[in-house]
Length: 415
Image (cartoon, rainbow, N blue to C red):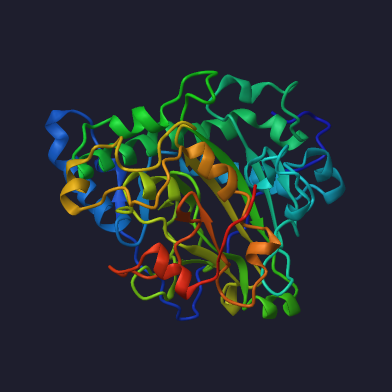
């Protein structure tokens, strides 16, 4: 709890009212976790939820989760903590940076960067297109599921975070050990593997064993509007289109119309609508590779909202779940009868890699100028271990790595 001499004051985050702009957001498949019950007597209801998850995650890569079980009042309180943490002045933020002040200044041989490191990512860290830099502040928390998270001697926490570690850990641990576990179990049913297999083998926690545990990092993320001249240069895009590198990503739903999904079938961008106290869940690269491409790590972005919401900021609480560092990123260890029947096997060009190898490089690419400062909507495509770092193509049966090289600028980077 905060001391009497705290230098900050918690206040509710003010969300935007629903837009009357006429924009029609995509309707994500809604997964009601209040219907999830363990035990053989409830297997049929779990199978019905599994079928809904499979339909969406194998096509659009996104679902909406409702009735997840975390109290709305606690979540609103967490937002007020996050808001206070992200409003700390830049000079104070510099004492608690997750990496360098700019992505291109990182020594990637020593630093995992502000994408993954604990601490602040200040505004202007990432390069976007046409020379523009981002206008986003975020703060990452690591080792949330281990007792070391509470060690304030080892971890250099700002005052706001230090005063509220219990509330911060409570939410992110709930997402990992409850919501993620249920999503994994439903995926087991969809892929016809024993219930509990994916969570136990890819995401389970062993206290103090960082490499042998599933993981994740929590993030508070605040978007401020860009200067008008910069917004014009990036076509009103606040966060460039990208896919996530990990397993499943969980973010709080917001009424501000800003998050967009790139339709896997048409290439069009669709806004994501709002579900009060809901979670938006998307597939990351690791789960796409583990399922041999059956689940889709969808490309998504954040854009400037409609005019009637422009005076509001976008704040989001995100949990990026990650499989164990040693997890092999192809479908062979999963041994799914469903995937084999559908023909989702490890492509010949994929090198056999673990999650650590993928995550190390993929996570560093988002803000690097050599990849992102283009005059097109998408970044240059980077070839990593026989795989493209993002898959911007539409659903095409004949799309291959060779086809990508013909149609896109595909590059290789070191480190």
